[in-house]
Image (cartoon, rainbow over all chains, first blue to last red; front, side, top):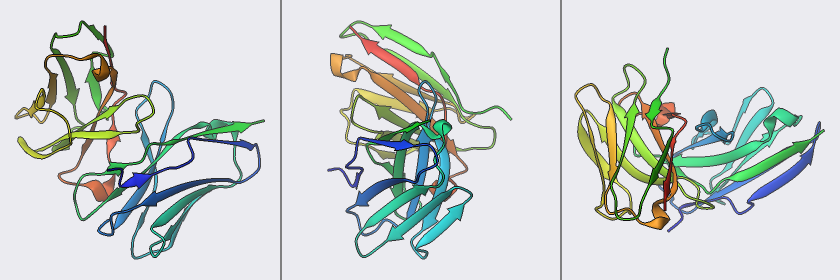
Length: 111
Length: 114
């Protein structure tokens, strides 16, 4: 039972354009959401998070949007840079329980 | 500050053998999490230890087990290895049960079962 889903396994974007990565979840108890970035041969690193009491959180080029009614969140990267090429995982938790991760989306930003 | 360290980096085992993977959390972190990243399956939760106790377990067979030591380091054991156990095993740590603070991951152990 995949509670957190990333339906796009890959995304290609040109440098300078916007990258939009999407994530859907099924568990209505989830109240905290995070995005992680993973480069090959490295562990995932924390990128940005959002609480369910908010619908938007911004950190530099990265913005996460949360639509609770649709059980959907998205990560916007503007402008995209070649160094952003990585696998992006969304994750969610209910209370202080463990993080549940999605299957990941591989982003490729071409010069 | 040292990050989360995992050893070994790579491990090759024969089907039916046992594998032991080790993880040292960030100093001060008491929670350790183990995840499996198999091809195309994202990060599948395996085990969560906090203060030496197993807090939660993912949907994996009993031959996946582990423990947390008094210094908060952790060990993941996989018995009776099967070919499909080949994956990247990631360890993460956090302050107590701190999913709100995010996890810090190690670089993983690549287990190959032949």
